[in-house]
Image (cartoon, rainbow, N blue to C red; front, side, top):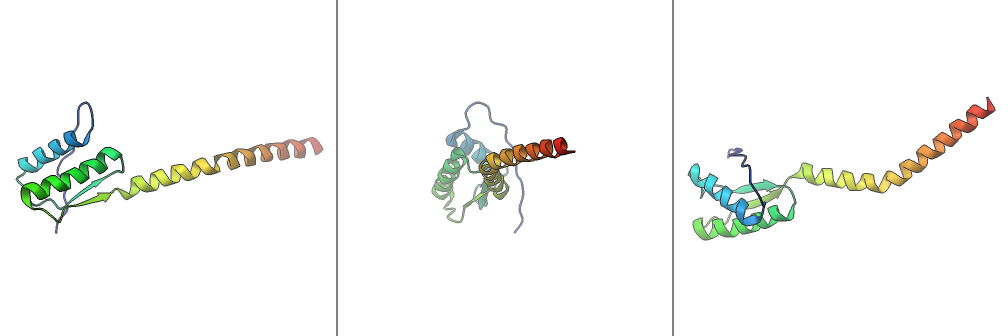
Length: 111
C-alpha cells in the first residue's frame, strides 16, 4: 500500500463539513480515485470530525467503501496537550521566578 498527499485545497469562506466534503469529492473525482481512498487524517476540530463522519457515509453510499477510516493528527493532539499542561504550571513558574528574585535581592543585600 502506498500513501500520498493528493492535494492541499484552499477554502474560501466558511469551513463547514459540507463545503470540505464537496472539495474532497471533487479532488477524488479529478484523480479518478473515488473508490480507492481508505483514510483521511485531520486535526480534532469539530468541523473536521463532522466532515470525516459525513464523508464516511457518503463514500459508503456512493462506492460501498466500508473500509474508510478517519485518523486524528497526533502532533496536533500532543500540541494541545502540552499547551494545556503549560497553563497548569504557569502560576507555579511565576511563583518560582518571584521567589528566586527575592532570594537574589536578599543575597545581594547581605554582600
